[in-house]
Amino acid sequence: MREYAFFLGCIAPNRYPGAESASYKTAEKLGIKLLDLEGASCCPAPGAFGSIDLNVWYAMAARNLVLAEQMKKDIALICNGCYKSIWEVNHKLKHHKELREGVNEVLKGIDMEFKGTIDVWHLAELFYDPAIVGVQKIRDSVKVPLTGTRIAVHYGCHLMKPRKERHFGTTEHPTWMEEMVAALGAEPVEYRNKMLCCGAGGGVRGYDLVHSLDITNEKMINLMEAKVDALTEVCPFCQLQFDRGQIEIQEKFGVSYNLPVLHYCELLGLAQGMTPQELALDLHGISCEPFLKKVL
Amino acid sequence: MARTKGYPEALEKKLADTRLYEDERHPEFTKTVEKISMTIPHMCYQCGTCTASCPSAPRSSYRIRKFVRRGLLGLEDEALTDPDLWLCTTCYSCTDRCPRDIAPTDVIMAMRNLAFKRDIIPVNFLKTVQAIYTTGHGVPNNDVNRAARKKLGLPADPPTTHGFPKYVKGIQYILDYFELKKNADRIVKEREG
Ligand code: SF4
Ligand code: SF4
Image 1 (cartoon, chains in turn cyan, yellow):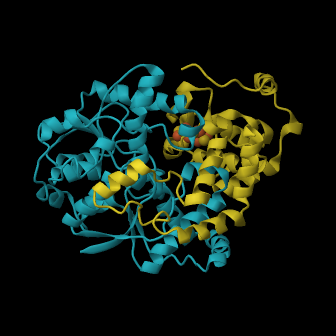
Image 2 (image 1 turned 60 degrees about the vertical axis):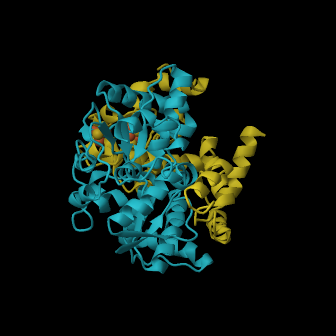
Image 3 (image 1 turned 30 degrees about the vertical axis):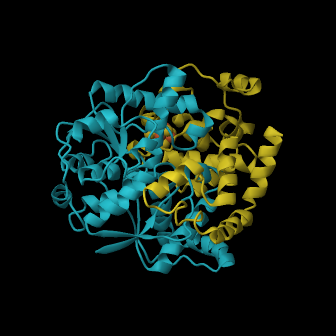
């Protein structure tokens, strides 16, 4: 069993606890144990904090990183926004002496020091990596295949972009998550402009909700054209934007789509036999019932 | 989608005037932007690939290419006072496609940092700071969610600063070190009374 410090972030534990619960359980079935990272905070939100003062963003993310360094564990997390903060600040501080010294000057005041001794991973990349889990093991863990459903993937932005700083290869047309969807027995579905952003990031959701929803709406139109039963993603903030966002789109633009939106861990949980209750799917803004009827 | 936000009149006038005035250029602005962003807007040849990749462009007057140009020319006031500065979702599509290896997204982030130094910042950004100062979370827990967590067999509060509030002190120390909470409170109060 591989062990990782589980960096929770905000939206999964505080809005979609089913995604958190599913992460522990699905990972465990695949040989990954997620340990509590006691005292972790918001990553902090890269859009808000990075926009105000990058130095605060570095220092706050470094505090979270040091907690995991003290545990001597790599971090695993389930949110693209958290990945941007935690992975990227770890990377920057490891490779940029001046930044590291600046951050450590701040952390000194709370008896902490960033040493750069751990790595950061998104749980989805650990699931996909054949050296850790791999698609075959995911397939083998499925008890309730999601046969007969058409599922689209939203990759989000901050896991794979900027491409040159990351290690995921193409950001124009990736297909690795579609492989992970197919492993659950569902049919992965392509749709127009798949890599378009959800619209929520960079503080835009809070700054100009209608503008941000208009981007989401464009994605929804493209998804509906592809006649999908559900959308899956690996970012609770994208999930919020698509799930609660559909309700806001209904209020502001008068169109309703009712497309269920599930985090990949929730989807994997279902396929591994977790019940909708164990996934707290009732907390979703858009009912997952039509999708569940097809699979259960 | 029609724009919902009107520009301040003075800015509108200024933007309508396409001439470049030498006295509006601040070469040190270009340098500061490059230092903070760790990218190279002065290499931009204005091809427009960034704007063409931008999800915010088709639904607003926001043009990322224009901001890169302002960075290059040192047009500090024009860049920092334009409300479109806050319409970048930081999706990094422009960065992945720029043929000159510039990271326009990071140019925007640097400009936002500089705008904040002049108190130019939408309040929603500051409210996130206030939430984190109190709880450690930008999106804090609530009672409905606590009940749901318990039903799932999870602790009512996650093992973060919520479950271990003693860690909030460290966060407050960092935010106070940069005087961020103080400034956030002051600006929010000025805007909202
Ligand atoms: S894509 Fe790059 S080179 Fe082209 S206009 Fe944008 S920043 Fe300049
Ligand atoms: S990162 Fe910002 S400027 Fe670049 S394409 Fe995305 S929204 Fe547009």
